[in-house]
Image 1 (spheres, rainbow, N blue to C red):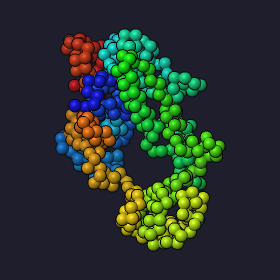
Image 2 (image 1 turned 90 degrees about the vertical axis):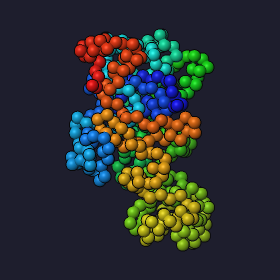
Image 3 (image 1 turned 60 degrees about the vertical axis):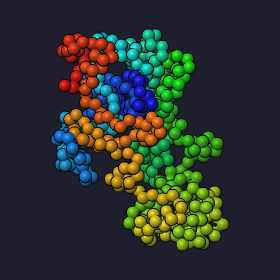
Image 4 (image 1 turned 135 degrees about the vertical axis):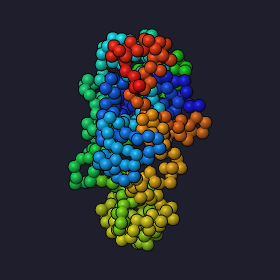
Length: 428
């Protein structure tokens, strides 16, 4: 039994931040009704890769590029009519209900679902859903316990409130790109949609907080969550340092602005991360590399000194570390009790024994793809109510009929009439 069993979530969100939030809720046991337009969530068309299975038991591609290069892997082929990897990454465990919101009957149908829901999540532009009677003010009149999460680029207030918001644009706006990349290079975005994902997680936290408060008051509330707010708050120590000193942080590549040595270092045959969190660990580094003079030097005996004399210390360390293979350094630093890891690509990351031990790779049966690999949930290790084994991301409209029948009491004849009128769509 999941921690959120019995919770009903109406998901009107698209792309990533909202769907990532509702996927977390589904992992924890909530029933999530994913409302999609007839064309589907936009991410269904984001690719390649698009994956179409050839029956159960297929395995994921074994070689880098085997999906997106048009050749396919064992049991796989690239196919526009298949499922996109992007969509599969953030929609597991949900129920897809296809409704045409431009039709008044479709609007009424979703309003009826909202009256049955505990939580509604949406990421339309500010004010857009009011035209469908699906804004918080309208819905809360009939469902005062509704927790209504709005995710937008800039929030419901302020001079940018009406603007659409995209992760990459807000990465530029909130400052993260100014500190990402090499010192002499161009500003760089974080390749994964970093702000979208954190906003999804913040959204789940906000929903759980509102549920706890509703248990006391009996009332829902409107949760106004902005990508910009999340991105700026996520600058944490860099932002706080600037606020105290008015000094802009430098772009340092893989180095840390306040800890040395801390970052990526090249061995003779590859890269690894060395993360020295205190002075004792630095002393052990000097022992492991057999250079006691780098500890004896008073400039380097405190972290503050190492940060100050970064330009003198790091070239020395880099030259030493380039002299031996990565495996040797990993062994030496591990034995010394210094945090060290290889810089893995994704193939290496998924073959890490820790990934299997923690269930971060799950095989899931899909109705058209057969057995597919999905990411596991990091919430799978709660002692009494762990995240559920993932269910497949739904086909477009896979649950339209079931939700209309089981939740709203529609008869088969009524559902067929709505399909014929273009108000809803089913997968089969």
